[in-house]
Image 1 (cartoon, rainbow over the protein chains, first blue to last red):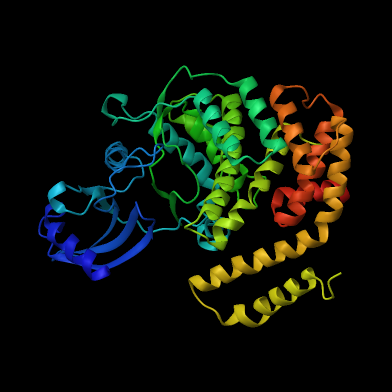
Image 2: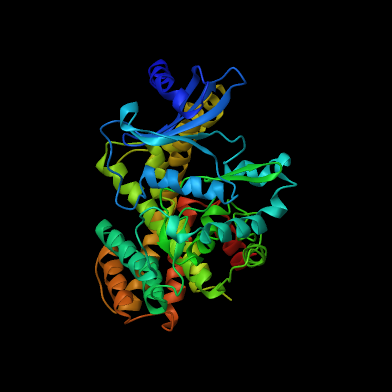
Length: 330
Length: 126
């Protein structure tokens, strides 16, 4: 398998990096049937270059309905990189004649994405106090990308998001009074479409952030990018599920909302804290619904894994977090 | 009547064996999977021990709150419907108390190490 992908990539590599002589060290990082991520080295006389391939293999063109699509992801990463945001350089977009499927090749960036290591390892101790403010700046940069240059993306609103979550939850056919309470709370406060509609990253949280001892190195995974309320990204990064035990540091377990907002506003954009809180509630419910979805897929197969099954039992974590947000105890 | 040991005792014995004897000698991705498996067995042990009392208490609260009877799922469906329609909300004094108690009982089985649960547990009992 690895030799095969190395040979396939080797045929095309010179079109991405002039003078490249081949490919080595291919390793599959993740992948379901429809989407794969590979790490490999581009061999070059001037020094090898670490690279990442993100692709839907041939025959798997269609993306799930919420996904932006790999072509759009590549365009967004190029725009972010060109705007000076921490985003890997896209070296090549797969062409039909490459026969590698749909996707792109980007520069590999060294660093850590695992939250527990970022929050606990000594090597990140210097970076942690700076991250919340930095994430605010970077979110502002993402939201400020030139709308005229963006690829075609779905447009979301709070109203649509509530309806999507409700439909998915009802489909599980399993009563959850706390989710009902959250849905009701969201419907009653639904602000409709925001005055300003911008690019929203859509999954701005641990796992999609490469962190080094020097701080944030890259924002990854634009799969859920869309147009909508920019406050959504700020709410999602505050969801308790991404604090990994550091519950008094709402931004990813490493910082405060105030720091996040200060970074955002220093970059020239306005924060609406009420809306951020609204999206934090929405995000908490969304993660809860996603956990229930894992359980459904576990039951339906073919992924009959313990991991999936146990994630189903994490939806109650979002229930206690929703109660802490909506019905705090004295 | 089935004989002893109970399912809870059997599962705990298996989980302890895997944790103490097998986990130390397994490496890589299978070590991760084994940890998930041991967590699952521990969860089942907790559920077998705690569910009878928590289900009974939840049923009693729901009967009181709804003024109706039925199975636990039926009662939860009825409560869900009332919340969705806005017939009960957090202004209803017993609702918040019921949801908190029910959720704490779920976390005691699912994830007693979850930080939000530990915080709420300490606030209530510490």
